Length: 453
Image 1 (cartoon, rainbow, N blue to C red):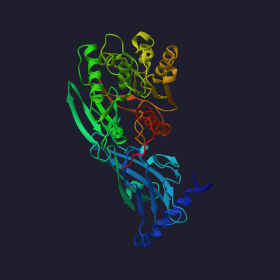
Image 2 (image 1 turned 120 degrees about the horizontal axis):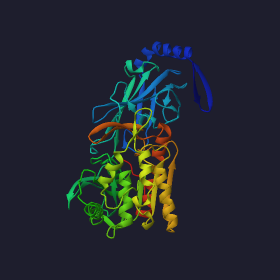
Image 3 (image 1 turned 90 degrees about the vertical axis):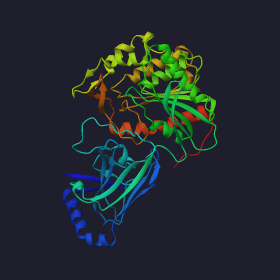
């Protein structure tokens, strides 16, 4: 078995005996390392989750095989890890940002793979998904370096450091909202304002998720994370009124510029973005962003009733994972069941993955584009389409989840989302940068400095 490593454009061939000899060298030099132990640094040690960091290991013996590992204990008390196998250079240095990993949860030159390639540690429960619940605390990640490659978990780290990854920047205000029947969480950026605003919604998984809204506030937007899936509205009119009221809560806030409010929705949340923009006579968003697009909203049915209809029609793949994609294709072929997006008069950005196994998001985007062309409004539409990318397009450097646990009719199943880890992660980073640029263009109308902790 042979391993390879690129160093400054040159290809080094490293055989297993050579790696074993390097390991023996590390052991022989352990006494020297006690005098000048390895140093591991993470810069910056405290940052927003969408900021890059640099991981550097120094004071290693030259040519020493090591494993650099990240470890995180989730709020659900599950352990997540990522790791790469490296060999120190002639100076005894490993730079995760500059060197190539030739094994582990990722390979190649990947500065942020210690985050995006995270997976549950061996022996964990199946179907886990890592999501931040309390945005007032950081995501703590322990970065460590271990001697050797195989069996590294059984050895004590040579050095370690803890990095803090924050969704909420210093000075961002978090305010619980329970007014006019609307529930959610409002995040207000630091500073005098007024600011542009966003109504922000996740998909049909239920519950109130705040981590994207808090990150948007960290980039200068007043953002309302809306709790909408747990409410039981007896009629379509009352349900629609709920979304209009939520939008107007942001628009009428004293820290918000009234005519600079947009909507950002994922999956089921994109249905709300489409419908509110197309049909409301009182809520007029300046722009909308729809991730993993869904415009299925049959007339006369509440969003909850529509969601329950297609979730009851699931397909099963060869791994016994469940998916709504096939049944959704059948439901959405009748255009009368879909939002008439040709009525939309503001700029919109669609972000979709070509390997979305949960919903026919690409087909939905094609239908949206067709209707916009027919209405003479194609100039308002921008589209991002990513190969080998699934349904769960999260903020950058979030782990990729191809299939996770989901509750359908009070029963837990493994739901298939799609995507391949490396291209999906690249899509998350690229789309987030372009989403922020889109919002900057249409809500702020000018460049702004990069926000950092």
